[in-house]
Length: 384
Length: 128
Image (cartoon, rainbow over all chains, first blue to last red; front, side):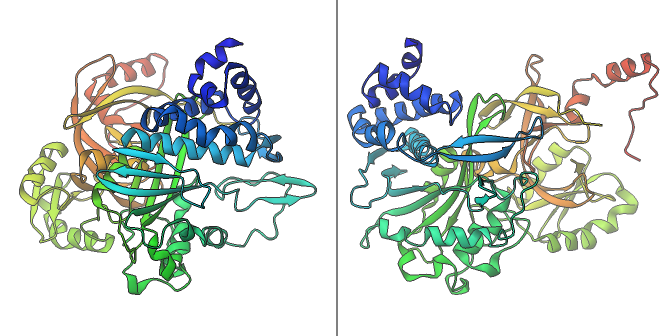
C-alpha cells in the first residue's frame, strides 16, 4: 500500500500525507486510469518546481481533497469498443475538469519563464504564465458533454463524433454544438481585467480536431465561417469587419480575449497509454486588444501542440494549385510522364525523379514552402 | 466476419535538421511514402521546425486528392541504424510508415519469397 504514495510524492504532499494520498488514489481510480493519476503527479511536480510546493498545496489541496470528492457522480452509458456492448460507468465531471486544468498548467510550467497560480477567489483566471517574455493570463475550461442526455432514466454522454449507444434515440440532438459552446463561453471575458495589457488565453477541452469547424469556428467567428471538413491550413482568419454578429469575437467585451483554444490531451497508445499527447487549435481574436504574439504561439505549439490559425498559410488554394498543374505541368506530360514537378506561383517548374532531391532544389530556388510537388501525369505524388 | 484490429507497429526514428524523435508507426502497405505524422502535430512541429519545406499533392484511399505539408528529413527503423532521406508528410490522424521505407530496407524480396513459398501468387509492381 505504501507504494502508491511513494509513486505520487507531490500528490501526497498536496493532500497532506501518505495515507490521504493512498485513499485518494484508490477513490480516484474508479473514475480515471492509473495513467491519468501518474500524469497528475508529473504535472503537480512541474508546478511545484515552478511556483513552489506550498503554493501548489494552497491552491489545490481543498479542491482535490474535498471539492471533487464531494462532487456528484453521474452514471453514463458508454460503448465498450472491444465487445460492442453498452457498459455503465461512473463519471465525476469535477474531477476530470480539475485534472485537465492541472495537466494544462503543469505542461505550461515546463515552458514558462515564470508563473503564478491564482487562487480564483476573485473570479480570476487560473494562472499568470510568462511565455517568451509575454505575460499571459490563462483560463482553462472543461465543460460537460454538450450532447449529454437523460433518456429512459439513464444519463449518457458522448463527444459529438462518438457513436450513439445502441437503442437510445436523441430527438433533441439537433441543437448544434456551437450553440452550447457559445452559451458556456459567453461570460469568460469577466475573468480578465478590463485594463489588462496581458495576452488573455482561454483553453477549452475539446476532444475532436475535425469537429472544431462545427463548434469553435461558428461560436467564435460566426456561423458563416463554418466549413466542413476543417483544414487548419486553409482556414483564413477573418478580418474584424467580416465577423458574424453572433460570433463571440464580434462582441466588444470579447476584445479582452486574445484567443481561444480547443485543446485535447490523450493517453497514447489508447488502450495502454504510456505518454500524454496534446493537440489542438488556437483561434486568435481578430479584434483583440492584445493579439497573441508569434513567440507565444510558438511556445504554445511546443507545450500544448496548439496550431494557431494563421501560423502558416498554404501558398495557393486548391483551385490555384490545379490551375498551375493544368497550365504549366500538363504540357510536360508527353515528354516527362511519371517524373516529378515542383511548381511555384509564378509558374516556374523544376522536373526531377527523386522526391527529396527535387524538393531540396525547389527550396533553394523558390524558397521554403513556396511551391507544390506534382507527379507529371497522375498529379498525385503518392498515395496514402 | 469481424475484422482484426491488429496492426503492425514499427519503431522508427525520424529527424529534421537537428530535431530527432522516436515513435511507433503503423506499417501501411497502401501508403507509398516513407513516414506520415498526424496533421494534428502541425502546431508543435511548426513551432519546433519552422514552416514546412513544401506541399505535396497526395491521393487518399477514397481517391480524393489533397495538398499535404511536408518536411525534408530522414527516417530509420530502430535496430537497423541507417537513415534514409525522405519526405515527412503531415496528414490524417496517425503515424504511418509506408512502402518507401520497406523498399529502402531491401526486405521486399524476402516478403515476396515468403509469400511464394506458401504458394501465394504475388508480385511487386505498379498499382494498376
